[in-house]
Length: 397
Image 1: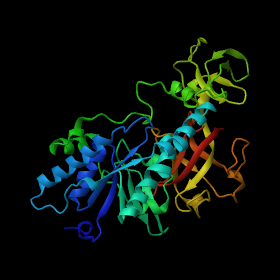
Image 2: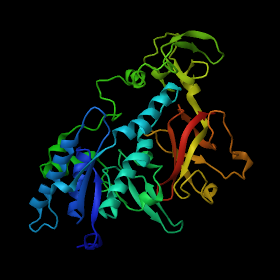
Image 3: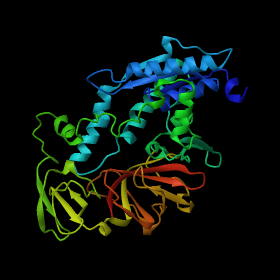
């Protein structure tokens, strides 16, 4: 029995969707000696979503655990499954931000907002109520403790599905009690194989949809248009002009919500060369088109800053001396960057008319394609692949 199994209070609250990742995570935690409570979040105002799927998944994980061990320490009971209706606050915090960003020509990361403000907050609040010292999810990420800095960090994994990018806004008080059972799995198929071996019905369940709160049968543009019902605010929905870099009108667009930086398909316009969206201007309701090479830039201005060590927008001490890299979107590779303190005039902080918060300039060693306003720019310390913070992209330069 290892140290984890010997702990006196081994209660843990696991976020469960009923999918293969969270179900397998439940089984792995049970095998490590934890007393697992599964928690399902309902984010849909029209019904219970996957509530029963999640309950069944937790029950199956317990059954598989009991079947694999002759003398079980923990058994399933109905009180081990916890249901939380988060639909109203999810609408107010996540969906409203999602729609507002798109209407203003920006492309949001709803998971980045949900994780600290709803999902992990509710997990830790529930854990506190149960007297559980730990929380967990089925994310492909890991946590590390840096003794030299006296801080806990989210860190990247070797998995192709690494999700550390989405977790950069989690504070110390959450990371310090967070466990990722899937941290060491490089391939999703390995997780599915464990589920198959243990007879878990989620083994062949497809991955979650890209935007969890919009059904795959619903177009996200229609969702945004309908979100505010009969509101007279038509920002981002009204038609406007396609223009080139010199301001020449090239044609008409269908509304800013239909577009994102770097997009080529669905423009409905022929220019005699491959045209890409290079800029979206909400104030003038214009979408600028250009060639692919104009999308590559080396500097980005980010706002809504958050750094793990400080727990706010303040830069960590000595950050300019570290070997850093950054991702400009979830699927993008990390690339080397320079970030310096406010005392260095070469990378001075700037203020933008588009944001009331402090903003920061990030310099990439190599040009990055389609750095998109609204997306998160997440910064890593290459020593240990630690996530040290980041912010929303305001503009690329």
